[in-house]
Image (cartoon, rainbow, N blue to C red; front, side, top):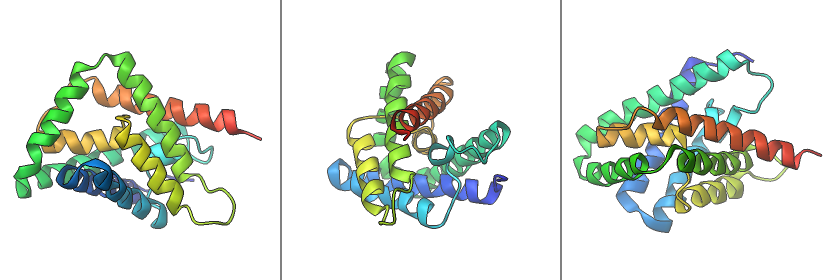
Length: 187
């Protein structure tokens, strides 16, 4: 499968929409509402790195393009949110400060746990609706403080700052967690 730059860019924007609602509402309600962004990604077949990184029908180069387009979409949406909704910037800035204060190992582990959540949320199992998986997966990663690389890009743009090492570590952790849980659950 060839990565669609448009669909990957859209996925980043949709995840940033989740970031925005979480910053506005916070808590359990914000975490549940954030899942709307992922639900739209799943239903509109947008190409989200954290949901597709384990798929064999994408080459490593296509996965990298997908990641970069996701980050670009989330970052662009976040920049516009920072201009239009300045009241959410302080919360995003506190989040970025908290990420920068963590060790790379702590962020890697938290991102891997988010990767587990994202794999479970986006992988179709049986004929039922994926909505409960999406809602529980997103709420779990947000309320646990796990790191989602694309969401971090959105929060960073809203905050107007990020430490250089955070996104690569988060993306690597997201991928590692997704691959690990896929292997552990393999039949």
